[in-house]
Length: 148
Image (cartoon, rainbow, N blue to C red; front, side, top):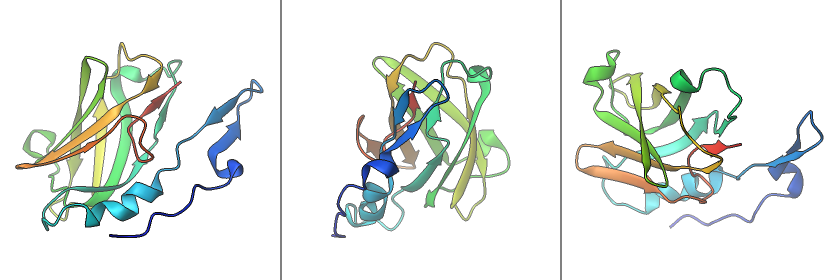
């Protein structure tokens, strides 16, 4: 298994908002680098980045929020209805399903999601390819969206 690195310094975790408040970000690359060693399947989905990973409730496009996922084993196509990778985010009892496009190579997904009704807090990401499902617990370093 890959070594887990120490937590980054505070400067990596905190950025000041225009209001003077600080938004604390979760350091996401630690689990992404160790995830390939967790499952031995060569087709298991792997997530390296989720961009953006922060969602503001004041965002005007919550009903069509766009984001990108990079990783491996995320096969898709240029037509969202034909994408072999499903991406969902859960928060409490609510599930939000993304519509994604990409390529057969499976390294980048370009997605949109309706986050209308989402609340403050963290979400859990669930990425499924065939019988393989990657569920990232709420509050983990890689995590899902951080809603503020």
